[in-house]
Length: 417
Ligand code: HAM
View 1 (spheres, protein in one colour):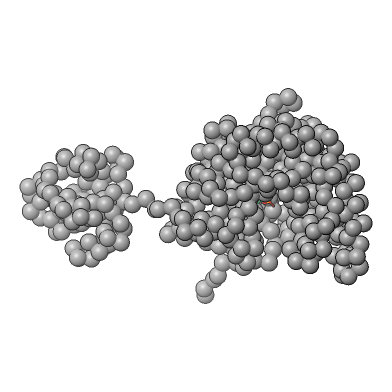
View 2 (view 1 turned 45 degrees about the horizontal axis):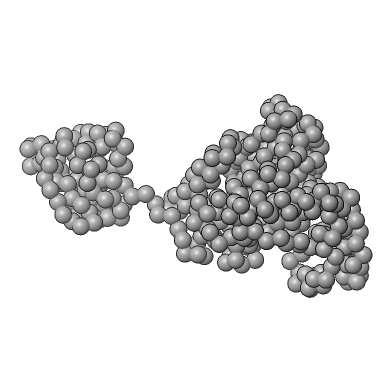
């Protein structure tokens, strides 16, 4: 019986795992510079954690959650995103202190029952950060700067950060009403489900992938005209901060985000070369969520960035990370005592060198082939003669130049050459 990976899931095979590891290391290196500490949360949570945070009108809650009843009769959901679980953990762990900002980062799988396509999976992975407990515009600036710096660190310099403000609640209410009014002719032609969705949260219309809707909404009222003075001032200040930080941004009034918890600043990072699923990263401010989840009243901001989409963007730009090469491949050309091979390998590894050798009695020719395939930089050839004389042949596998040296010189020679 053979099995296949489930629809919308992907394996990361050994030949590509270094791409993931390089990206994750780059993320960890960047966020460390800003004082973020990693948080890890369970794969599944109480379903209500998501219905209460992502929101009853979001696609995630309505159509995409992996929800099931466990054997104890609890409603369980595989996490569709990282923010609510991180906040749940910080609140439960009494980490949050009023008047003190808490910075956390995470690398997590996220589960959404979507129609799979390139860059859209049912199990996808995100790197993300949450800056909990600061309402300042500098916090917005920091979070966006980190996202931008992360993409630069992995070699994606041409991304654009689309920013917008959803304003405060009065602004949003007025904007929703105006948008709904404007969209009435559209709503007439929609099926009942679509119409109810649009009526419950008209902002969703702005996310629509339907070109007819997008075309119709081109002349729709813009949220900027509804901003309270504080929100307008925040956006001005944010743009100044982003300019100072060298971030490539564009004010984009149609960015509204697909999760209901956002307030004020929202943003997405866009790539131009990966087709329909071009949102590399999404984030924003969620000033009410910590309190709504039972924690202190703490304004917060964060982002989540898709790992698969970042890797696809790199691939489309014909950029990839090189896998590290082994330092040494040892070729057994007929030693009497196999212990010698293992001892040499152990010595080299103690000096932090990466060593491979065959254990299955391959011919010398086959061992050289294997050495080539491993992409090792050096070959060490030891036969009966070398064994007797305490020498080995050290061969540069790129140039094929070789020298004869004694066993005790090996580590030093491989390290310095
Ligand atoms: P999100 O925009 O839903 O935001 O997801 C963040 C990123 O995850 C997206 O920009 C995209 O790159 C990637 N992503 C999402 N769904 C999929 C999928 N089905 N397949 C592949 N990649 C996907 C959030 O999840 C928020 N928690 C972000 C946040 C953090 N906001 C504040 N703090």
